[in-house]
Image 1: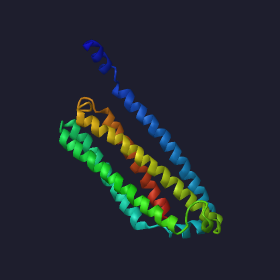
Image 2: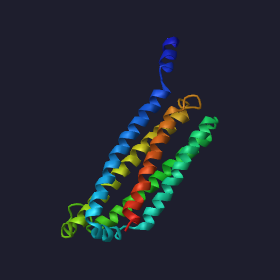
Image 3: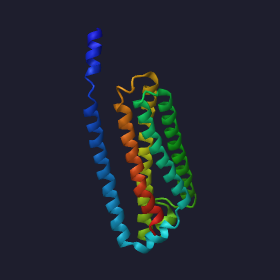
Image 4: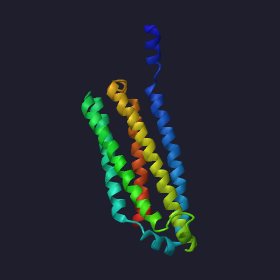
Length: 205
């Protein structure tokens, strides 16, 4: 029975696991890369409308969320280093901090979206339908792309949550760290996507 358990444990391949995560990240880059191209084409066709629509967004909230994600990227990287050094307690603290920052990001996004919806600015609203095609395209892309990014935040939060509890029970440790490393890679992808979304929607007028 013990030999079977050992064989099952040894069957885990960290290299294949990381390769799988890199392939997944590549498909995600293709997805958002395509959306960025769509955004660029429509912005080129409707420069004035995109410029005016962008002024309706709250740059301060966007900047705060950018800082939050940059810090969270640092804390998740530090958590991996802490586990490599065998510091389980620090790893859990850093992962918890990353999770808290992610929740703050989502709360900020909730209030930002709520303010837009309160002012009848959302896809399909009567007010937005009364505006130009460029305005509708801008806010359609804004809600879709930031909404898709928020779903990735939630997925990343779930993955890091699993890593947190596996670190806590010892099944993820300095000798078996792939799950946390993969979670960190995914989280860096989420942050990188936002680094592109923030200037495209909030800064380039």
